[in-house]
Length: 118
Figure (cartoon, rainbow, N blue to C red):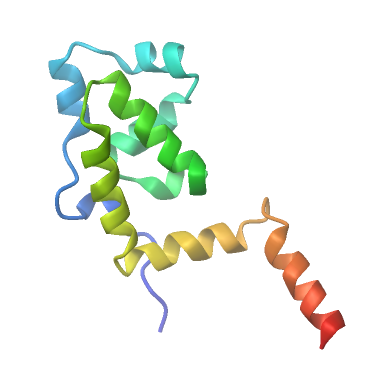
C-alpha cells in the first residue's frame, strides 16, 4: 500500500504561520517577489507548508532561507523545522516525486546505465 503523497508538510509539528508573521511585519508577497525573484505561488506554498508545489532539492532550501530573511524570521529555526519534517514519512513522497519527475533525467539515465551494466 502506498503512502499518501498529498499530505501537506505544513501539518508538521512546529511549522509556523508565516503569512501571519509576514503580515505583522507589513511586508507583502509582492515586495518579496520584487526583492528575491521567487514566484508568488512558491512563496505562498512556503507560507502554507505546501512543499510539493516547490521545485525541490536545494531550490526549496534556498527559497525558505530567502523568505525567512525577507520577513526577518530566524532562518535557522525555520530550516530546522523543515529538515525535521524531511525525516518524517511524508518526506518519502517528496523524494519519490523528485525522482520520478519528468524534468529530472537522472532516474532514467541510471535505469539505462544499470540495464547496460547488468
